[in-house]
Image 1 (tube, rainbow, N blue to C red):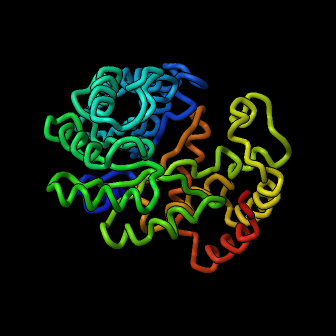
Image 2: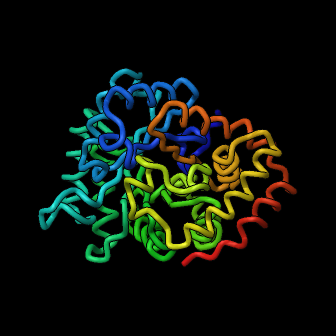
Length: 317
């Protein structure tokens, strides 16, 4: 396992992280969560990601019960604040919700601090200086070490950096963005100036495009699979994507790896990716995905060109 700096920040995160979206508290119970987190840790993962909104807070509760079994200093724990409930001040990035939401997350996680705090979405209803100053307060109070954004636009992130600089407070260190073979432009084009200008770090999610890049949907949608249970994740161009994954799977077989391993390894080849967050509901899935570390070195320049040529036919709706 390689440990990367998170942009300019001094902290180091494992190049593969482990997340709790959709799985913890929904697809898997506490016993399985414990097994998965220990397996991840035993294979070198130190970065574990969650959010206040995942399973309405239950994902943080589960993670908190397992975290206590590790030495806290060995872990990098992140949570994300935006969707905290149904009250008028339970959503967004107001100073009130950022501070109260973070403290509530810490209670569920049974932690004194989180290493990374992400503003889960941009909030057009809250001035950026209010957001920046609220997060800086959390950092000054020792509740948060580093902060970043998630699914913000280039201009919104740029404004956060500029505002933090003007106010002489902590700048964001990272963006958590969706990134996979079917969804590339955001990270590779929109954010490229930010990586160069601010040395922004990036933790990426959905490297397998909700499982499509595992190949398990090439012959339909199995019962109890993620897309069967979470139909809102089903893309409009699903059939086109499965045609492309069939081609990618042939290439993976030639490289003696699985399609999932190939897809994750492709993400890791991007030099701006600090950590790629895995999600798994079964230990076997997690172990397979961890095998991407062995595949990464086999992705030569020519193979990367071949992969990119195959996915260039994808048209996003």
